[in-house]
Length: 310
Image 1 (cartoon, rainbow, N blue to C red):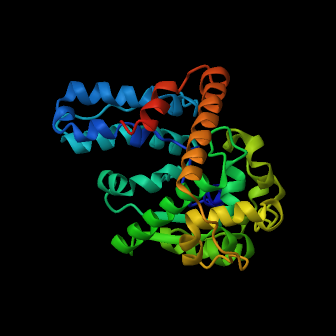
Image 2 (cartoon, rainbow, N blue to C red):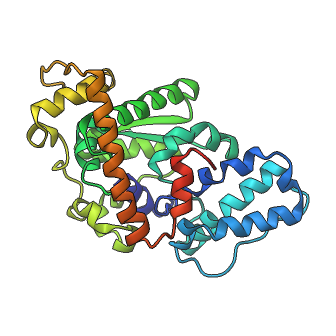
């Protein structure tokens, strides 16, 4: 929703679908000096352009190849920025942004690659996040593992805002849907762009802006609060207490109501069981999504992400 709001602004950024590819190539960045060789920089630029996530954008033509004399770091930035610049030009915009949730784990890397970048951290009640994630073919499948992942993201957000107070802005989803104009003006000021009331009309956005539109059907109803506090009626009290055991401190940190409940007492056996069943379910879903539905288009990249390589 926030991505579409900002993308609608005449002077706002071009924001493509989720990317992944910058962090997929982080291993290349750490191979110091290799891209200082011009032939290597050209080959890498073409390799980035061929990434399956970039190909999904259906950008015509070829990437602009790097000039000679770039340092390794500058050549890396040149290569990973070319898809964004091409997408930006196609949209008639003058700057770009990236909306990829796993980037919360890579802010240090992104700040290194793009000095002066600004980051918007969007936080939503973790219990509503869990309800959504458990329906997705790539999400965790129980309240405990969802809570652990959400809590980890919250802690990393806290670390980054403490380290970069002028570069990271916190926005709560609940504030965005209940005070959309006020919050969007705040985000616009932070990003140095003009606010326009038309940014609020997300329901008028070209549907081609979203991949997997069936996952985000609520967006076409306009800004509303129907996806807020779903956990109060859709999540069992047992799962609420289990989530509190995994992420209660992080919920309270952002002022979320715990409904007067105490965290569940979670044994080591339960932790291992939830971890094992979550792994098994995600493995089945991985095969269905990545091998059967997507026909392996992104398979090796997804495996590398799961193994923490790049």
